Length: 169
Image (cartoon, rainbow, N blue to C red; front, side):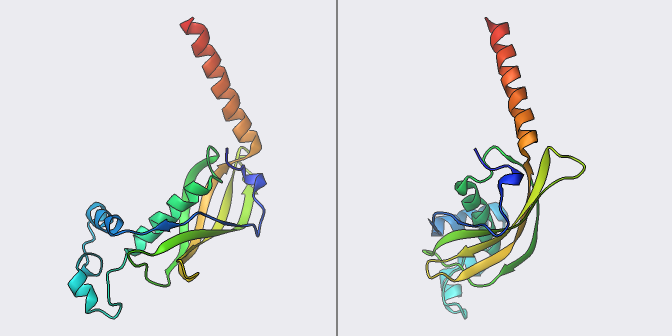
């Protein structure tokens, strides 16, 4: 189970496991997104570019950030919704074969004054490559249950399970 909003500590830094970016990732993302820019899809074209080879889409890097964040498990069963991405910057290219990992820093965690069953966690997200270079950085805000809210949801689930069991018997 993930953390409730009051369990996040401002300043807390966490890191994900690594993930190697493959040519398949880039080809599939090109197809899904419709972004077939030759910097992503044409080895000959990108070889003549200032970067000298194909790069991953910037938004693919953002998607990898959300996936690596999920692997960290901090919001498993406690996240309600993503609320936004702010101040996102693409700082360095991600190349085929790079192994990236996510480093998060909790900037704020507060319970909602109007809805005490939930709150908002704001984290700085940094996607780093195998050399420790930050390739992307930005802020993500997530709506998360409070302990009170999670207890109510869990209680409802237990009640619904018990009722379903009693009516099936």
